[in-house]
Length: 479
Image 1 (cartoon, helix red, strand yellow):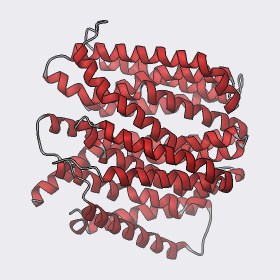
Image 2 (cartoon, helix red, strand yellow):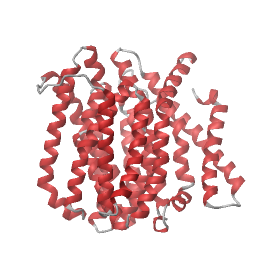
Image 3 (tube, one colour):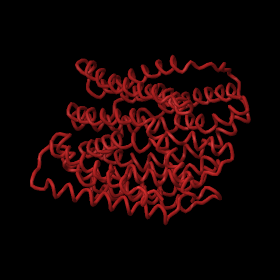
């Protein structure tokens, strides 16, 4: 590829990434504080109930609001060019209302069964259901912030939510149990952000209660496979918690839940940032018939180079992090952290790789692959958790996400074959090598010393050394 074009591609990726980075750093710093605080105050059984509640919330958002919000991001440019935004948003609003009505209906049908099987009270279940509504609205507003590149407003909203969550939790906890106080804090915090964004976005579209067949057809054809795919991904990432909970193993539910909650809260805001920042750019390029193969290839390489060292932190220092951040009963988090970190890395990488399905409106291919892997995953969870406990959970989750990556990498479209094995494998090899070298240098400097403060110092020096080497030899790496 032309060196000038290559440099321009990496510059676009880096500029988009850096524009959102401050907000994500704040999210990560808050997560490093907030998740251990919640783990300290909640008992193992309370934590297991909360983690099951979060799993149910993720599921409900997956089937009711996420796909609607993603449809806004996918089709905004299309209907802006055709001057049909008001019709488009009217139909999006109607779809959102219909999905809310459907999940409320399912709640009244299955609330008793879910409460019995997962040991979660109907009051908590209902609070989770209510939380879906403001979460869906916030998700919609965040897509609009991405489209209009309002990075500062996005950053401020994140800061306000994190602060509100912690303060409200402490305000409510003296009066109600910890799980309910946490869910109440989340609900009030999200509603606060929704009101702020509604005021700041100053939406001017005049919405109407009229369906447009063409718009609905486009959105539904795009979204139905997306819903099924997301359910399958949810199974891979969350089903294991429910297996433990059904078997009354509250301690392991709490362990795998906290491990996933902590690592996701730390890594996902950073890893998802690249797709969050560049997807609107990719859609614009695609709608204007620009070739995006080389651009997306640069994006995938950038993802590996930028984020692999953070996975290595949880590989090299997993037990040190567990000892530093959590109570002694959470020591076994050190076993789970590497599995969670690698899974999140692959999951977010795959989202970038699978933009090809969204652009070509062939999300059904991703759905077929995901359905097959999900069946395998459920079987694996049930068998391995029975015999190997939390280790079986980690193996099942990681094996399933690797299988998903492998099969999706085999699907190719003309001008969208940006998963270039030779190029990516070279990039992966170099970044792993630099990570290992950086780790051993830091290890040799500090192997005689060990305490909590030094754990933080070693991690920071490891990351600093890695990026120093990358920048120093960037001409040999960014190819």
